[in-house]
Image 1: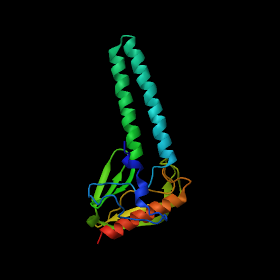
Image 2: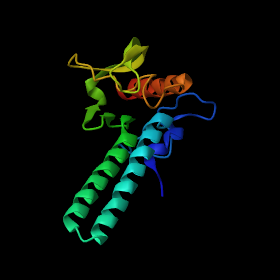
Image 3: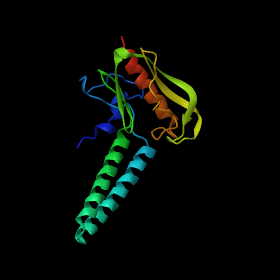
Image 4: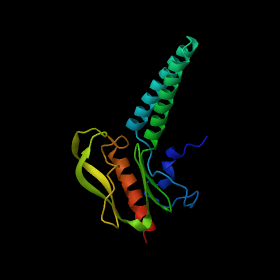
Length: 184
């Protein structure tokens, strides 16, 4: 079964340089993330899935005990936790020939390349693993034609790049190359 959120290797050439329009397709609906989800993000999703398995087990026990209402509540909670875990893995910046998509936990923003003026890496205070604590780091900023900026979701201190600065640099290079090629 193909896992499209793990196909970030397509965005890099064999020598590790950014390749913005790599094969296998140039389909505008082929959204790809130019980096792999990091170990912190995958680990958090795995913990949520483990929690969901315990909730499903408790739903089974409650159903066998003869309380279908409680089992239904546990089942709804488990499905919600599974959906949260899957969405957590999908969080990040996605690109295609059509535009740039920023996927947050609860919201997705899609911009066509014509609405993007610049994609650049800046030094600024960033949130450490998405927590309220901020530290000095790098963030990828996407500026729109309207003058607004998307919220910096890709930083060198988030769940994808904490402890992997070279992967942040590669992802930033690929995203900047996509923007440079498709904004023309």
